[in-house]
Length: 153
Image (cartoon, rainbow, N blue to C red; front, side, top):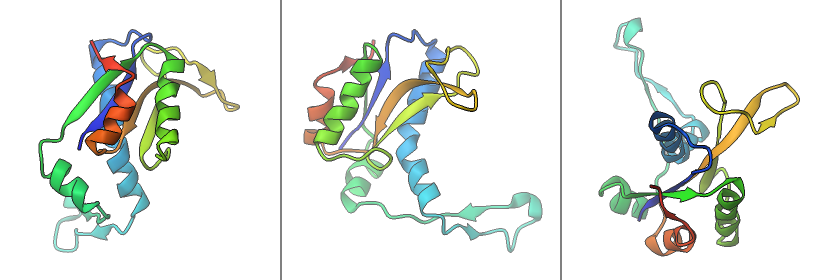
């Protein structure tokens, strides 16, 4: 299994910005699971209030656990030339039966630092699409998506 992350090259993000966006894309699938399965257990009962801790439980597919979580966390970071090419990855994923918000996540930057908003919503909040991140996928499925993209350089 491997996780694919595809980042836009045309945005000319600084190395730090690119690292942050790729990190968001990598973490999106697990943070979604944590938020979705909110049976948080307050573990602070025996701790001081300043040591407040929670424990969360959520399902993980056994294959994902054995081949990715308990493996080497293989990731492939590819580049998309522009917005349209990044959206091509979304289309390919959907054609393979993958679902946005479960199997893959579009990463929209809040444009608070170096990027200029591509879209502005009705509340005046601007965003720019930077990446798409996938949950860990079987190599065959991952290859069907990533073969259209070169490794990020």
